[in-house]
Image 1 (spheres, one colour):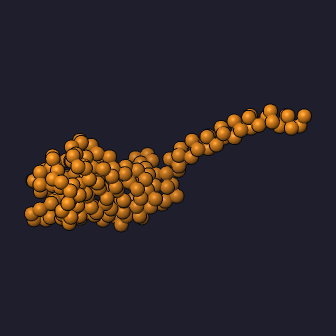
Image 2: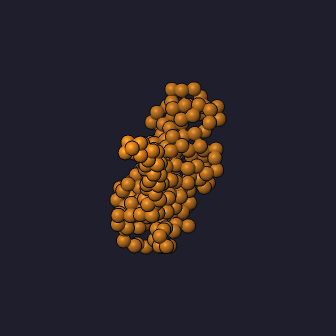
Image 3: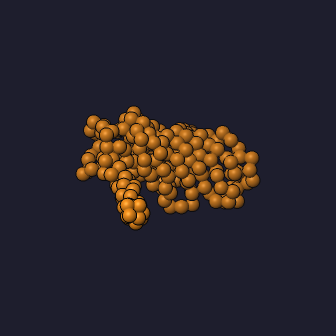
Length: 210
């Protein structure tokens, strides 16, 4: 009888255990979100591929075929960047840091770049911190989304995304990109001391650079 009762109760035990596990898994991300701090940064990246003030240099001429929609480019072309990050779209606005890394022409047919870069902040409330950004940049899209995959300083263990837009073309060799960074950092990470240019809105640390 004891064995029969135990066998009969097994399905119920399994169902209850499964429900508990599912609830724990669902609660995990929500709890992490509640415990984190969302930081929003906006800045303008000046990518200059030639002429005075050049900040982007092609280091690999792709051995692949000529690109059908990007004249003069080849599959595999790779460029190293040390682009200025400014408070505004103007090249004379306040400097906030540098975007340092690479982008590679990674599509045979579409104008798509594979981006890997570090945002090194040298001004504003997060001076001295860095943000690691990687992702797919489809140049033909109005808004592109890249991933925040980590960082240092105030952005240690950060996760999130970057909304990436072409703000304007200063010249054939000078593109200005608007970057909106949304990074969530663990709640245990201490916020930086307030500095000029930073305002706090509720639970959001916003560097207001408009």
